[in-house]
Length: 332
Image (cartoon, rainbow, N blue to C red; front, side):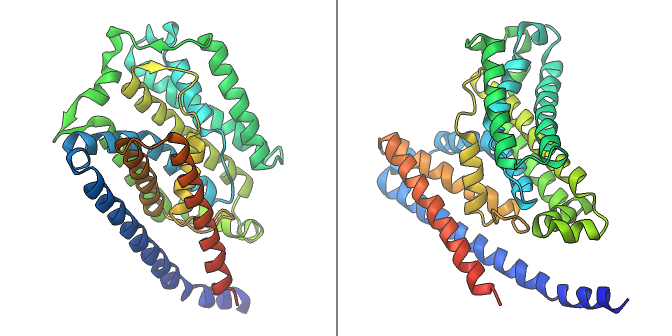
């Protein structure tokens, strides 16, 4: 009976330390954002510091950002999801078929969410109950979802009909000069933060990612929770599909190409451990904004897309190396 008490006493002092590390990391990310903003103001002041460019940055960040929220949960839980871009494409295609569009915009939105969540559940079941490695299971889902999207659309772009312009209005309608889809993104971030930091589900996510065996011994159904994490990621893909449909007025099997890399990179830059057990929603969103600003600066300065990819790759490598260095320094 004394052992649980000892564990409780040793675990309690660690929480402020973890929060302190997260706050320092957030300050560092804010510093990086400030540097990028200065670069934009110096190199392209006439284009960077405009309302239209700000809206462009936020709109681009919104779609990938919703996916990033789901990816944060999965990676904190000790997993990885490579299928998010393809699942988003599949959801957008399914929601924009003539059969689905005939039922109106609400059914289209519900269809996108259900398709994304269903795909996530399949991946989660394969990982949790089928004992498949997350990398392999989600890679298989990536290929299958992209292929199914191509088959359903016959590799053609599906336009949203005039009768369903409510979907498009999410991108064109603005409040205080900001499109509605950005507010949807903000709502997802807030709900994700509450779920991760203020609920039992969030605490279990950290526990499962930090030590699955200890979580199992503590009474957590690790397999069920793992499946739910991937379902949550799929749900975010479905919401992101609605946003990209609004931005492009289409459903396409090409939507979301390499989005999984951007989402995972944003999570890593934000300080979430690839091994699981540690991370924050705020850090992931700051990492996303850094990536989005880099993309915007490259476009404004007319730099090559390949150079942009090289820069992003270097940033990911540096972020992972810093993670490993910090872990070694904190190791007893």
